[in-house]
Length: 80
Image (cartoon, rainbow, N blue to C red; front, side):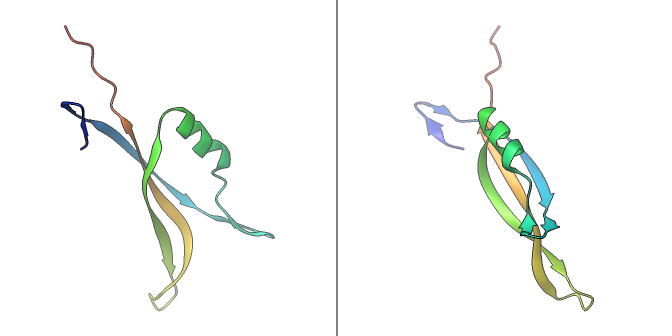
């Protein structure tokens, strides 16, 4: 939490896992339109973690996607 003036900031969070698609140009996320819409709704990226796929031996061999965590200030509930 972050202090904002004398109040403690309250956040709401959501996460999204994205598996990349393989194309002739390479791996793509397809996130461009969606992520800009989330930003327009006030969401900002708080963190990300690569999704690593194992080979047949259980050894990590490559990034196949990403796990994204977003946050935005929680809307104040009306008093009364």
